[in-house]
Image (tube, rainbow, N blue to C red; front, side):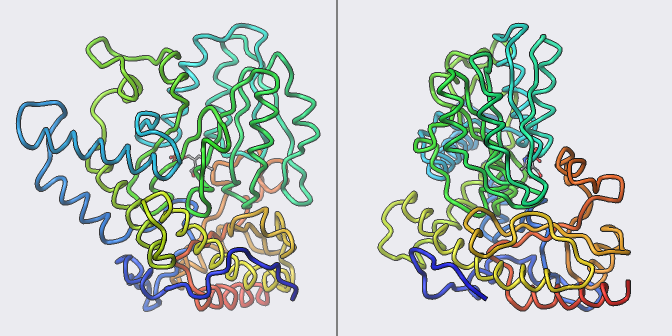
Length: 425
Ligand SMILES: Cc1ncc(COP(=O)(O)O)c(C=O)c1O
């Protein structure tokens, strides 16, 4: 099989160290070691995240801005989490807004933005995206805004960029696009999308939830107006984090209560936040930075270490993908959705979706689950895509999501189980 040269090449990936960090990887199901291919729905967390969450509750638990020790510590925990996410996304700490999850943050942002929109304004969304980046914007139809959809090409599940160029016009106010598809793994040309949006004076809102565990994010280079992700998808606790350009966070009008601060990012962080979750987010970012330093000891500073981690992760995940995809394609009766050619793997993350003739995705996932292999079935809220591919009435697709704690042996186990299923169908 042809494989694409990778730059810059890491010679080793310390998978034993990685796996030793994640207590959940020791779980067994029916005597089988658990193989977590459910990462797109939420990843496992390293020990230090568990310790940080528990440690916060044990020693720092309080509300903010009080004149006593635990409250001061809480203020520090919150500041550290903003700084960690700023390292992760390449921005300033005050440009980071925390919230319960991506969907809630996006609803808050779309509602705030909607206050300044008027009938006739247009918002562009895609048929490839998770519904959290679609319905959240479609809600603004009630303000008279028109929602325009960019199609996805069923043959390889990529966005129709020609159509995007056509429907982004001077009437467009927001272009909302995913960085990578949570269903089929396609990486979109988000830099190109941001440029198109800015050319007509529109804002670009990027959903990086699915991209964040797999690749580095640089919001300054992208020049996006907003970018949102969910730490529980990149080895942290259940929470959401949004980057907003400082001027937007200052000038847009969030729905908020009067006593809450009007400075950023606090004006966007309504109510009491998940402080223990924030402690865990900092620990998740530190875990990734340590992974980076282990592979590139000369990486100085947290941001450089994070970029080094993603270099290592990308190369390792690519190898697993090169093992997985051709073997899936050889299974009789299997339909594969999305980019399949190794020469194009740069355009995708290692999340793949398949169907096997004669078996519903739920049957496949149940069979695998009983053997300790965790996958998702259904549409995973990428509803427009599931409809566009015509699989929604038949239970959607089986999704296999690889992350850097998965192994070649786990991929072999998965493939063997799928072959068995295909032969019995
Ligand atoms: C691509 C993508 N966007 C958005 C979401 C929604 O994220 P959250 O659960 O943080 O609201 C998900 C969750 O699966 C996702 O995969």
